[in-house]
Image (cartoon, rainbow, N blue to C red; front, side, top):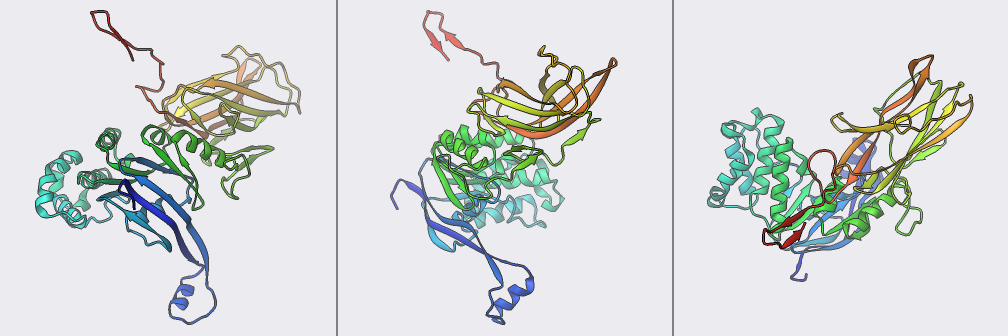
Length: 429
């Protein structure tokens, strides 16, 4: 392996045997049958890539793509079926936080237990103890058995132990989202500190904003195969194409790449929220909805600052005067952030007859901060002076905004900043 390579993955495959019944596994292990009692499932198939020293690399893909499997093989938790992995440098892995903790031991005892398992001497753990305790910030509870901890305290201590051992390679599997918002901010600051120190970082996440912000390169896995390995933008764009069943050059993607949702004639390449609240008298109804990015690609993932489109398809089951179409965007906690409707936008929809259909298009700029949101749609109106709800879909689907720069609050004010010295020299920010 070259001196500038931290992780070398060479033609890696991982096969799992899937048994329908536990007795089939037992029969095979005891040699009681020559019949093949299992189905083969390849979690990884012929995966190869290199990660250079000092690089930050992300791995993305849908559930079941093989992301966590490859991290477990790199860290030695799993053995590959074929191929090999070579690692140059001491690893700290944030996979299943607290997996090595003894619930009967105190927090202090678990710090020394985990440190020893990672290969540190007692003197080396002593030297790191103060920073671990400061990072966890759980006070005197560190002297109590961890079985008494809340789930938040448990993950804080586990994260603090794993991240304060000064590794050369940091491997993370969705662990940066643990704890409350203040602890998450502390975790991300530590992450940025590692990056500035030139550590090698490999992490799996569904947060495309983190991928775009931190990564030098990104690996895209789909059904255990590498579909792309390149810059964050080009790999995220490829991921979005895979979600709608298209391969790298627009060809049809692998079967089962995306679970499609079909609603009376419209196909959305993202799943409708199974917990969406739907109600109304249905004298007019929403038949379907669609989100499209700036390139016209059906997707619920858009870039911050880009224009995107929401489309609604509606049918009138009775004669309706002046129907009103609306959308609302909420954060994941349910706080309404923004929204509009055809009445606010001074778009008057003329009376419609029973059996007629409409397609309504909202186009807007995505100046929301990077993150995940929920979109609700509505079709309402007035009848004899009274407000009427014909059909509403609350929290119909998610909207993911990918950003490389977030500001404070929900929106970016797109500020233009200048800094001037009093001697007249000016620096533009």
